[in-house]
Length: 416
Image 1 (cartoon, rainbow, N blue to C red):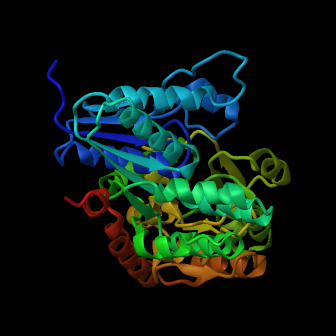
Image 2 (cartoon, rainbow, N blue to C red; image 1 turned 180 degrees about the vertical axis):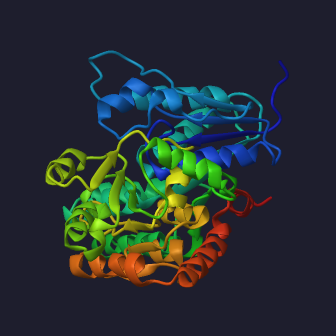
């Protein structure tokens, strides 16, 4: 087998994890094959490790295949039970050092500073120290959880040393990007807090260096959708086009799922539509218990990537009343942009974090946490909004979301 001429390695929580950034990695990998990379690898975690972590996962028997030329590597851990932590990180780092030892020009992209950027930094340093002289360019992409969960939690708890390590890790990469303007602003604000406490200069470096790269979406999976395919998918689920409100996201408090279930109970239109909750997550069992007596709420926990756009396209409205929580803020809202591409009923959401960047002026906005306003907005969409206005919103939403197509995002991120 001939040696590759150009390699892309993406360190990420890849499929089967239900996470927008696993989709980002897939989309960037697919475009890379058309942009001169002849060896593309996703460096990720063994499936048993993901299962043990309790992460929401897609059905393993229905994962979409990757194109030939994309290899998903799941290195086994290094060491035995006497190394309680870090064994899997050692496996990831060691495998990347092996790849960097080959004389192949390589771009390494990490999504999540902890631990993926740490893995890449350590592997590059080790390869150089070993004398391999790797031809490598590194890009670190800060996603929502890096800031709203990891860095912000360090600052809340006064753990400035840990925050310093995270920012140092981020800025050690050749390029540093954020998933949205909101995320970039949050990075700078966090850096300012660390600077004020420690006398560091992280904020100035972040202002100068951090750029924005929106999540890449495969628009061809959402546009166009055949009416027959939509109707067939809905029929299998016992649903009718335009007769349900869709929540399709991680089932968690920060996504506003509790607010939505309560709002649905207050809606005048609840006898005309069902509420479909599609997804899994930490709040699923509790929400199911809340809705146990309501036969107009349907739960779908096995929706795959093929079915997702069809459910989006057939709904009367898509509701994602996301709200800021201490451990999570919606730093973009990939599902919102995907819904905009798929078409169907209007999007009802909040201006939380970066959601405004995802939907522009094409969604119906309610105040985060305002259950009455959420119920009123959904009632308006279902009972009062003219079809012409719905179609106009749908057209504008799709046009706005096309800027997130994976080819455009890839070309902007991987400029020559």
